[in-house]
Structures are given as structure tokens and as C-alpha cells.
Image 1 (cartoon, rainbow, N blue to C red):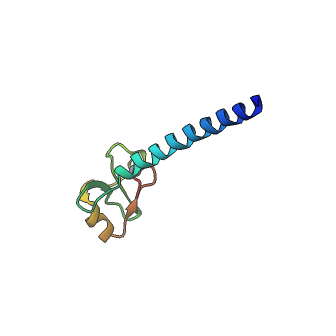
Image 2: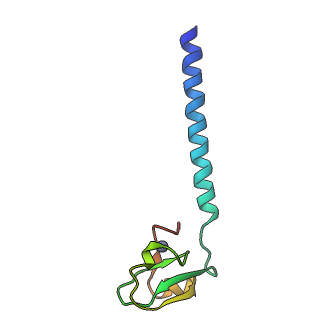
Image 3: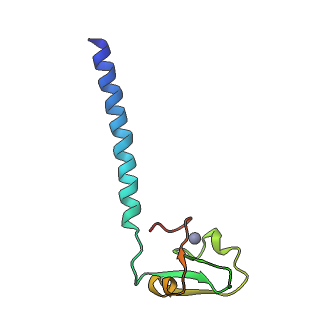
Length: 88
Ligand SMILES: [Zn+2]
């Protein structure tokens, strides 16, 4: 009988971990970028990402100008979301 209680507790702990994980995912999804959101891009030819935050370390490597555009504009230029600061 004790064994059953123990495994139930383990299950409960698993559920708690899983649900907090889901919560995290849900939070990230809430941050999903919309077309009209503004993002930052490096104008250098080699940059292929757009960033949600100006202080993202991905922009530290930018040796050109950093400009603020909308997600739509950035996508039109062929840029994709930075994996560090954006979640698509
Ligand atoms: Zn970034």
C-alpha cells in the first residue's frame, strides 16, 4: 500500500513539473511576434535575423547600423527571428 502512495506522489510531482513546463511554453507563446510588432535589425549584409530586444547579444556583432522595423518589413527582407530573443 505504501508503494502505491509513493508512486502516486511521484506522479503528482511529475505532473507539477509538466504543468509548470506547459506554463512556460504558454508564456513564450504569448510573446509571439505579430506582423506589426517592431523589431531591430542590423543593416549589415550578413545579418539574417531580426531581434525583439535592442540589447540582444546577437546585435553586439552588428558593425553596421541597427534599425527599427516591423516584423513584416524584416520578413520581407528575408530575415528570420533571432533564436536568442524571439520565439516564433
Ligand atoms: Zn536576438
